[in-house]
Length: 114
Length: 114
Image (cartoon, rainbow over all chains, first blue to last red; front, side):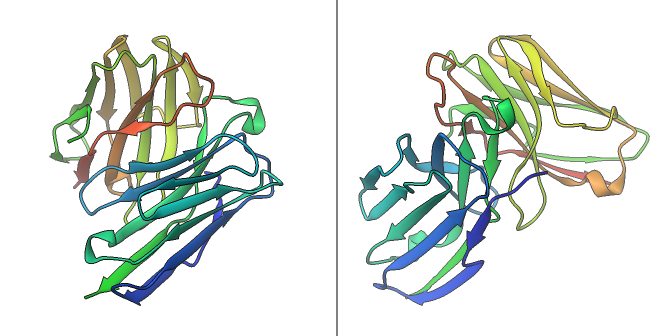
């Protein structure tokens, strides 16, 4: 299946550090979403972005919808141990003409050392 | 707790067995999805139902047969699976009154084919 390019693939950081990850595509999306997945569970929505250039925060998380509509960024400030997990970006909208589709990024594994 | 409920949580089946995965949501969402996820990989779209009708089939083998008996239920019937079909199967739903509303995921069924 089709995937978005997400980087970095993994991050190992100290508690309290800030984290940045991004997602890029060769195609335009109308929606960018960021999910977090813990082991044994389904992805949980963190932030949804609907407009190019939009910058949205959810607590310590901030995400931006790129101006070109081909990328998105997620920042986590002052990381804590419970931030551990896999973070996925996802693009949605009129990709390939199928408005119901959501295409996932390759994921970023975050490990936080106390 | 997720509002999308999947049963069973774990399933082990032989290659000649027939089994079904079930998904239920009572949020009034009229789009429901099946995704397949291998370890440390992003979810891959299998099927999408809109208003209880199959709208997307991502060229999934016929040994996987989806069914949407009503607006709250989604089933995935399994028959003659292969060991490589072992994965986490995720159900998701979203409302259709907004073009690109985010997906809400269940916690998945961990399937092992022996």
